[in-house]
Amino acid sequence: MRVYVLNGPNLGRLGTRQVDVYGATSYADLVALCERTGADLGLEVTVRQTDAEHELIGWLHDAADEGAAVVLNPAAWSHYSIAVRDACAMLRGPLVEVHISNIHAREEFRHHSVVSAVATGVICGLGLDGYRLALHHLAALSG
Ligand code: DQA
Image 1 (cartoon, rainbow, N blue to C red):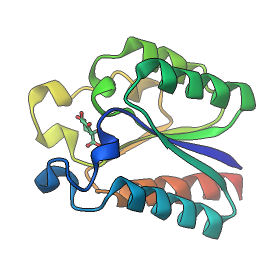
Image 2 (image 1 turned 90 degrees about the vertical axis):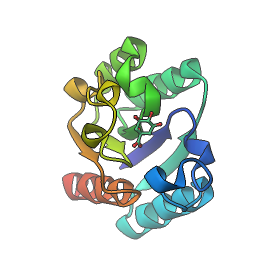
Image 3 (image 1 turned 30 degrees about the horizontal axis):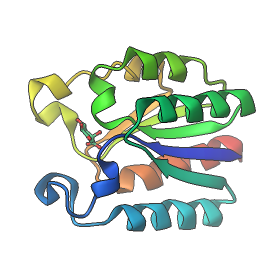
């Protein structure tokens, strides 16, 4: 199974960004975790991060065309980007939305994700382990 692990704005700064909220693990470590987990599970995993909304939308279009599965942390776009949500709605494979922090326990503007209604499922608040769990779920689906 082909899986795109896509990350939105500011997630490239993991490891130095609000360490109390997101932890001290770097983005490079997150990439390594996803690649290692994917290899162990027999998934073809590609991990990407962007701060440009149009770039994420392009990657979602590619995933839709390929019928690929997606693990997506839309970051701040979760809370207001109808364009990202509309691109997610075009996916033909499963979509797991991941948030490192528990968005429901934070500021009110983070409580709602416009993406969640078009996701297959959502994992939030489990730190980077959410990505690992999402990949395990997708592997179980394809197995
Ligand atoms: C986040 C939560 C969002 O509210 C925030 O804007 C992020 C990261 C998370 O992974 O917890 O950038 O998606």
